Every structure is written in structure tokens, then in C-alpha cells.
Length: 623
Image 1 (cartoon, rainbow, N blue to C red):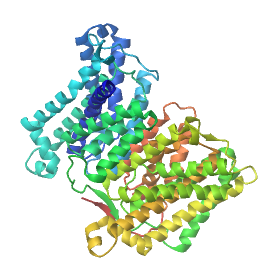
Image 2 (tube, helix red, strand yellow; image 1 turned 180 degrees about the vertical axis):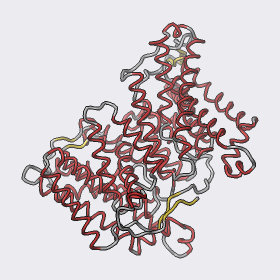
Image 3 (tube, rainbow, N blue to C red; image 1 turned 90 degrees about the horizontal axis):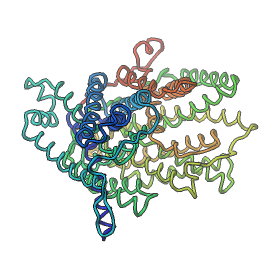
Image 4 (cartoon, one colour; image 1 turned 180 degrees about the horizontal axis):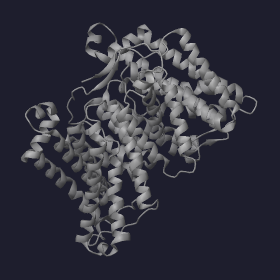
């Protein structure tokens, strides 16, 4: 009984941190409709600023409870100031754009903020002193619970009450609730929404910074805090229901308790349990615990792809150019061979995601799950059963197919942010399994020494990559003109009308999801063969973002967009990473600029279109 009580208290204490993060994210989304993937960066900024204030700048403050608390508030204020800058420079340019672009742009913001903090604060952990006056512990039947964590338990309900009063008893809160319901009507009544949005972002980032500062007496401030907390924050927000502060509060309690008991009872499956909890809640209530159906946000629509050139001869001409470029890369040496191989694999992965996004309107933020399953399936088939490349690739595709067939029916019931977060949850489950199932996957040591290709078959493998990349693009173009492609676009643009017309809406979405996952598994198997090793990082968030960037850089509705996007992304990442420590930050800045200035992709830019013949197909953005 004492054990259960202690773990219950641990869960409540952790829930406070989750709620502070989730409340800020919920406020920002409720008013601006922006899904801020960089929210964890403001959490980390609050922690790092407060820690350096207490340890390196004014260490005497750590001896006074009041001064320690002020240092924490200064960390929150620093996060709020950074949030105001981000709103002015980036977020206000994303208002009203599809959620996918917001997710990718704010991921770029997180990369830029991460490297900025690494440059400003250094790469080392900072151990702050324990909170004065709360260094002891409370005894429960021979077990001890820290006093500071008991104090943080009280903060959660107090913050919830404060936010409730702010939103229900003040003019600012009334306008926030009005903006949440109908921002256009609020502007029509003569109320400028810009200051309201700025204030909401500042408040949300301040809550995140305060949550990070409150962690200092419990753990050191470090540069991994952003990624560690942002995924579980999204879990809380989605489980509670987007836009619901009360839903975020109860979801934080639920996830906090699952996290605490999971660490004690099933430490290697804690992350899996968290995401399974979210999946169960959404299976019963697709809008979350207290969420309401959201108005359809803006989404990019198109009747088909821009097929440039639009003739079969033109396609063959471009394909010939690709073969020539691949031949030049092969002759240029190992470095360019490796870059070209990486780009071709990314083309296949990008096409797999582009098919379900551009045609079916299904946004995935966790396509790395199937890429990783394909990689591990191929690697295990080779190391355990001794299968050669064809059999290993088939095993990888089968692994991705089976997972997609098992979970696809549940996932495609959701849409928009909910689908994006569920797919992210699936990828995190695969990542956790790859990291912790050491007996099968090797854990962080990975599966190394794969001999799927050798010096004699390297050229043949490279030719296979070129052929599969071109075949994937050709198949996607044919799919967009097929009966299934037309049905997918009907389901995407008018699902209720499509259902009324007799189309099996869920089956069509399920089919494209499974087929897309299988192709992603093939890309993963090719990646394992090319690298000769597989590590858990293949299932990381960065892999999913790379797949999205490949599509968005070239253009979601550009048939050749994945080829252009993959080439640019792989080359830029390789060149920036050669001797430049902060290349991820520069890449993040590049991502933000592209998402703001060229949401239709680089191939959709006017000056690019003027250089080539084209088939003009209607496309645009609608509410």
C-alpha cells in the first residue's frame, strides 16, 4: 500500500510539469490554431536560464528560497520573451496555413533554438542546488517522498484555477474564448486579434518556461530536455482534447500516473504504456477526453499532380536526366555515391508519404515507424535467417505491411492533428521498442555488420536504387490519374459526399495507408542494406521530419518534388555538417524560410515554373 501511495504521489508531481506544458500548448493552439512543435524548446530555455542564473551568474541566490523562486520566474520570463520574438518573426506568418506546414516550420524553429542555446549556454549539464527550505522528505510507512515534489503537486491545481479565472473573469479571457470560437467574427467586431495572439503565445511560452525551471531541483538542465518532454506534452494535449484546458489537466493526471507506475513496474515499456493509453482514449473518444469537434482548418487541395513535363516523352526525358546525374555521381567517387544513394532512398520514402498526403489528405508525423520496421525487418532476416538482399527486402516490407494492417484501421478514423499525433505516437513506440528490446534489436548498439551488398554488387544495388526511385515516381503519377486516385481525392475533399455516393471511405483511406507503409518499409530495407547497420535513430522524430521535408521542399503536389527535395535536403545537410558545429540550427532557419516563402515547394515557385513547360492544374488553399 505504501508503494502505491508513493508512486501515486510521484505521478501527481510529474503531472504538474506535464500540465504546465500542455496548458501553454493548448492556449496557443486554441487561439492561433498553430501546433507548436517547438514548445519543448521554451521549456528547456526556462530551465537553462534559471540554472545558469543560480549556478554561474548569481550563486548566492540558491541559498534563499525567495531569490530561488525569483530565478525560476526569470526563466519563465526569458521563455516568454523568446516566445514573443518567435510569434513576431515566424508564427504570425503561419496563421491560416495548413497544420502540416506549421508542424514542420515549428520543428525548424526547435532546431534553431536548440543550437542557439547550445551556443549561448554551452553543451554541458548544469546541476542547480536543491530548493532551500524544501530539501527534506516526508515519511510514509517507512518510505520517503521529497518535500519539494509535494510542493509541486499543489501547483498544478493552483495553475489550473488561475487559468480558469483568467479565461472566465477577465476581458482578456473573454476575448481569448471568443477567438477560440470564431476569430474572424472577433475581428469583424473591431477587436484587433494580433495583440491577443501575441499575449496568448507569451503566456503559453511562459508556462512552458516555468515548467522547465521547476524541474531544476529534480534534474540537471541539459540540451535534451526539449525532445524528452515535447512528445509527452503532445500526448497530454491530444488525450485531453485540443483546445481544452480542463481536458489537459485531467489528461496530465492520467499520463503522469501511467508514467510513474510504468517506471516502477515496467521500466522498459513506460513510453509504450503512455502511448497505448492515448490510443485507447482516442479509440473510445476520437476528440479526446473533453475535446470538441474542431472546425476544418485550412488545407491545401489539388485535383491532381503538376506533371512537368506532362507527356510520356517528357517523363522519359527527365528520367534520362536522372540516370545521367546518377552516373556522374557514381563516377565522382565514394562521397558522391553515398550522397546519391541516400537521396534516392529518401525519394522512395518521400513518395510513400506523398501518396497518402497529396491524394488522400492523410497527414503523418510518424512515417519513420514503417521505415524503421522495414530496416529492422530486413536486418533481422539477414542476420538471423541468412537471407540475401531480395528476401531481406521482402521481410522488411512484410514487417511494415503487418504493422500498418494492424493499426491502420484505428489511425485513419482520425484526421488532421489527431492523426499526426497518433502516427507520431506509433513511431515513438517503435523507437522505444528498438531502444529497449536489446535481445532482438541490440538496443543502442544496433544491428551492425550487415553484408547485404558487397564490392561486387554495389553497382547493381545503386542501379536498383535509381530504378526503384523512378518507378515509385512513375507509379505515383499513374495512381493520381487512376480510378483509385480519383476516389482518394474525393474522400479527401468531400468525405461526406463521397460516402453518400457509395464510396467505401474508410476502406479507401485504409488501403492507401497500408500501401504507403509498405513502400516506406522497402525504403527502410534499402537503407539498412546501404548503411550496413541499423540503429534506433531510424525511428526518431527527425526521420519522420526528413520525409516531410523531402515532400515540402519540392512541393506536395509536384510529381518530381520528392526528387528535388531529397537532393537538396541530403546535399545541404551533408555540406553544412562538414566541420560546422551548428549546422542543425542553419537547417532549421532554412526550413522556416521555405515554409513561409514557398509553401507550394521550390518547384512551385513562379521563377522556376517560367523555366519549364507545364500542365496547369487547379490548386490552392481553402478554409
